[in-house]
Image (cartoon, rainbow, N blue to C red; front, side, top):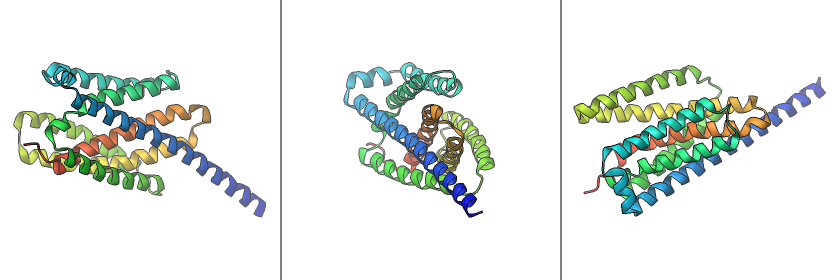
Length: 234
């Protein structure tokens, strides 16, 4: 009996170590993607020709958004059909394109408030990701409900483009923060569970799709928080 327990404990420890290693790869890819996005945004802000090309008319900006959506769909739907290298390249290409579009915040808010909000978002994200990793509670049902909330956020955001209602703007922003706080924990738990069942040869693809999910969680959390903590440029 003692030998069985020792073997069982060793197996659990080995699995924990394996999952931990996979999650490190996920977070590393996510962190690198954030660096790519930040560097791209800063490049846009520093280059007036690029800035004018993107923001001089609605076509260029919305075309980039469509490219972003296309890349997300391509990565998530074809992850099992493409190679690990292609999946990773598409992910970082998405980070570049997102950097082009998200650079608009540097023209709307002060650099100090953007940096401050980024630190807040990083702290909240880290806390919820840690919770999602270690909690014993099953967050599956919560995650499904939260993703339904994302659909509601999109609809409310589109409606407010026409209404320009400041109260609705802040209500949607508050709900957006709450939703992506929860989704961060849910995605972390989901990725951890997938890591435990993923063979070594498929870790690269899992790391890419996991990094993409957490990257999107962080970016959305950051942007919603920016509506509260961002100081408008005069």
